[in-house]
Image (cartoon, rainbow, N blue to C red; front, side):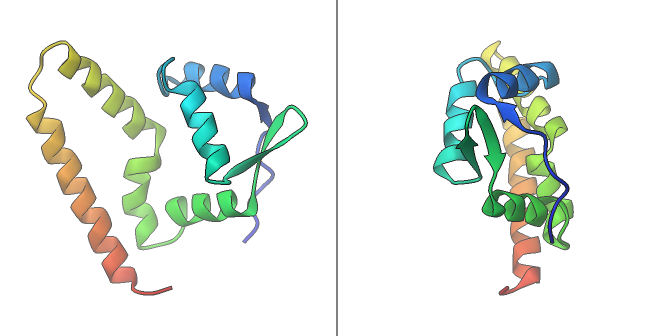
Length: 121
């Protein structure tokens, strides 16, 4: 399955977009871009980061393919990322970390169950 052509960003534009959407922290922006490149989810073409076929396939698997996608979306969605970052801010401010750890544990178990239900590809 071929996904619609994704927006093309320079590294700087991607960081601006991440900031606009409330994703990541200044300390993680460069590491996020490097991780995408290291895992070959994107490549550089001139000044732009362009999704690879692998990147498109991983995205499709995590967002479209049942039974994994409905569970995986909890981990790859912007809302989840923002919630975890806000929670980390609260923990840094002194709040108890146990409630989020319990939620992450439940979500991880659900993801593992979905993977087991899917079986070998």
